[in-house]
Structure formats: C-alpha cells, structure tokens
Amino acid sequence: MQILTPHVYWAQRHRDIYLRVELSDAKVGSTFSFHTQIMMCVSQGHGAKGDNEYRFSLEFLEPVRPEISHKSTQRQVDIKIKKQEERWWGRLTLQEKKPLFLAPDFDRWLDESDAEMELQAKEEKINRISVESRVRKDPYLGLKKGYLFMYNLVQFLGFSWIFVNMTVRLFILGQDSFYDTFHTTADMMYFCQMMAVLEVINPLLGLVKTGFLPAMIQVAGRNVILFVIFGSLEDMQNKPVVFFVFYLWSTIEIFRYPFYMLACISTEWKLLTWLRYSLWIPLYPLGVVAEAVAVIQSLPIFDETRLFSLPLPAVLGHSLSFSFTLQLYLVLMFLGLFINFRHLYKQRRRRYRLKKRKVH
Ligand SMILES: CCCCCCCCCCCCC[C@@H](O)CC(=O)SCCNC(=O)CCNC(=O)[C@H](O)C(C)(C)COP(=O)(O)OP(=O)(O)OC[C@H]1O[C@@H](n2cnc3c(N)ncnc32)[C@H](O)[C@@H]1OP(=O)(O)O
Image (cartoon, helix red, strand yellow):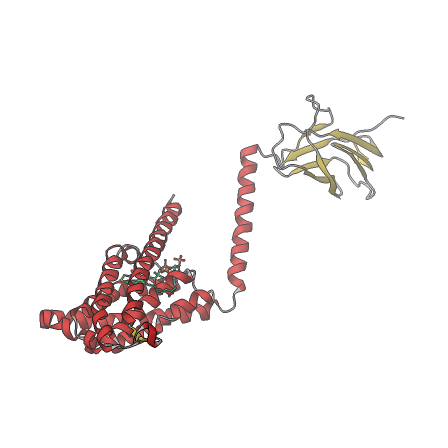
C-alpha cells in the first residue's frame, strides 16, 4: 500500500516547535507516538491525494517533551511541541537534508534575534502584571501612605518650627541665643522625638523599608541625650551645647521629612533627594561630636548630684555614679556612629546606582 505524506510546515521559538500539517477536516483521532526524539503522526483527512490516511515522522534535532498539543481545523492540523531544553535549534531535523514534505511556515517564522525579543517582551509583560497584581493586592496601601504622609508632615512642621525659631533668635540675639535654646524649643523637641519612636515601629510593621537597627540607634541615641542629659539635668539646659545639638538635628530633618512626604505621593525633587542623601555626611559626625560634648559635660554633674546612681552593697562603696554608665555609652555612641554612617553611605550608593540604571 502506498504511504501518503502530507505537507508539513514548521517554525520554532526558544521553547516550542510549531508544526502545521496541510490536512483539511482531519479526524479528531490523529495519533502521535514519540520515541526519544522521533515523532510519528497518523491522521485521517483530506490532503493532496484526497480523503485518505496520511502519516509522517520526524526525527528532531534534539529531544522534545512527549506531551503534545494539537488542534484540527477545517484547513489544517496545528501541532505544538515543547523542547526539552530551552534553546534555539539550527534546523528541525537530525538529518541535515530536509525531508521533501517539510518547509518553513513563513506565517510564524522568526529568526533567532526576533524570537529573543518576543521572549523578552513576554517576560517583561509577565513581570509587569505580577508587580501590578502584588501592588494591587494590598488593600490598605492608601491608608498606610496616608498615615506616613501625615506623620512626616507633622515631623516636618515640628522640626521647621525649631529650626526657624533658633535661626531667628540667632539673628536677633546673636550668641546670647545659645543659652536659652532649651527653654524656648524643648517642648517641641520633646514632642518630635517622642513621635520619632514610630520610626522604630514602622519598619517592624513593614510600613517602610528601613532597617530596624539604624532607626533604633538613631531614635534611642537622640532620646538619651534629650531626656536623660538635657531633660533631667537643669544645669545642662542653659549650656550652648544644646543649641548645637538641636540645630544639627533639625537641619537634616527639614530636608529628610519632605523627602519622605514626596516619596509617599511617588514624587521626587532632585535637589531635595540630593540634600537628604548628602547633608548627613558633614552633619552626622558633627552631631555625634556635639552629643559627645554634652555627655562629657554632664559627667561631673551626675557625679555631684548622684542622680540615677546605682546603690551598692556597703563593702563596694556607697553607690555607682551614673557617669560610669555614660562613659560606657560614649563608646556605644561611636559604635552607633559607625553603624549608621555605613548604613547611610549604603543608602546613598543604592539610591544613586538605582537612578543611574534607570537613566541608561
Ligand atoms: C540598640 C540600642 C542602641 C542604643 C544607642 C547606642 C548609641 C547611639 C548613638 C547614635 C548616635 C546618633 C547621632 C545622631 O543623633 C546625630 C544626628 O542625627 S546629627 C544630624 C544628622 N543626622 C542624620 O542625617 C540622620 C538622620 N536620620 C536618618 O537618616 C534615619 O533616621 C536613619 C535610620 C539613620 C536612616 O534612614 P533610612 O534607613 O530610613 O533610610 P532612607 O531614608 O533611605 O529610607 C529607606 C526607605 O524607606 C522609606 N522611608 C523611610 N522612612 C520613611 C517615612 N517616614 N515615610 C515614608 N517613607 C519612608 C524611604 O523613602 C526609602 O524608600 P526607597 O528606598 O523606596 O526610597
């Protein structure tokens, strides 16, 4: 009996092989069999030699997966086969000479670089959809952003009030303003620094991408100075060091909080970003030095007043002055400076590397 072979057209992508078999009204029961990389197809349909049984076999260049998807239409049978390994084939069949019944399917034909671009476009689309669906999944996003925006606004207003107040007094009173900074601005500073505890809680709740430790060091470090050194020792309150500490703190915050506010509404001002990620370079070490001066100045006062001193058993002496704890704290301060300086340096690099990548 004569074996009839249909015309078969082929095209490929990195993952798939497409075959189009020229058989109209092919019966649903086309059978396919696979043996490693050989595929055989038998089908009843209307081809070049009228209504008949047609068959063909192909030995592929590389192994394919045995599962196959195919669809018979009035005009043709479309077959899709998955390659076992995702790569571009130089030709379809193992034998170099192309079988006579096989030809390229120019309707689907793409060369390798076009197929790569198509693959890339598909992957980008999938990524975009998955990012969009992740973003859409958070039903509280608006609420979170609203809360962060309000928090940053309140902090911005608080620190701006301190900064403007101190600057105006400096212009009017000159050096005399150094001595009553605490009495004129401490209430607002207490308020802002108590609120700043939220900066440690926010990353714990996953509201911001900040590391917990840097925020903890920042907030705890400042609050020790504000509440323990300045707040509890009246003798410290009229020292010029208060002016320098408060001025350095508020200078960075009047840029940092508006930067966060803009981030909450997905907006950016280049100059503000630059100031947020650059001003800390001189301000942070200066701030730590000013805070260290405040701690050192408070040591004799704690020794004298015995405030917060730790009672000791009679054999060990009367009590342990709080100044010992503060001397230990001085060491911690420089460790904290190192950790946060490195953190801010990394944040700066990440920000500007990211931006460069977006530009190219
Ligand atoms: C463990 C016990 C410790 C005990 C203490 C030990 C001793 C401590 C000594 C410490 C010395 C402190 C000295 C200090 O007080 C001196 C001064 O402050 S001087 C003045 C200069 N100071 C500064 O410049 C520091 C200012 N502070 C900060 O920058 C932050 O507090 C800090 C945690 C240090 C770093 O901030 P962060 O990690 O948040 O970096 P980013 O700004 O880049 O933010 C990361 C991403 O999160 C988003 N984010 C963060 N916060 C908010 C917010 N409130 N609202 C909205 N979005 C926010 C931000 O947009 C970033 O997102 P993206 O990456 O998408 O851009």
